[in-house]
Image (cartoon, rainbow over the protein chains, first blue to last red):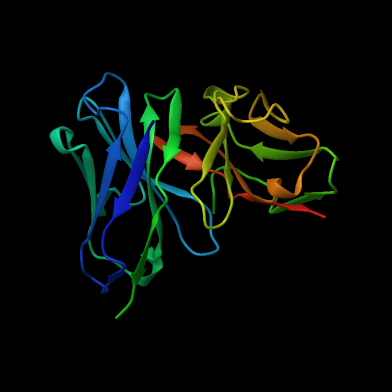
Length: 120
Length: 110
């Protein structure tokens, strides 16, 4: 049974760096083809893909946010961490992490999401 | 503004069939698989259709997907009240080297 859960601060000040952790079970990020991605949804807006890291450390980023994002994995802890620098109120959103398998099955299991509000 | 275009809303009465369309280009839908997600507010999005037309286990066969050229569609038959929610198409965009989602379609069951 695959489960994922996001954790991190609910409130971030403008210009600060956001660090989110995705803790998962039911699969290993050392298995060939497996990946974990991050997707967000601002209030009232559409889903937006942010980043994805694969079992072989191949990391992909949204070209619109690449300069601000870093995704890393800790296989021994079954965790993936996303950092986003220079946070702005427009980054207020629910952030989701999700399991992926190569390009064939992106985001087939999702965490419940965590709401991050950017405000001074 | 999303790379993939979806109608903002769709509706139907219980038992009816409804289709949701997703329009893209040769750099995204035209050369890659399409995926569909259902998002009920307050819950995590759920994968409904993968690789254009395949259903994950547990997804009712009332849901079906198809793709033609640079467009794709999600069909829902035997509409139920619990089908109300947001529906997103997604694919890989080769020119952006990014996963892209449609703007979402809000389905209302009247």
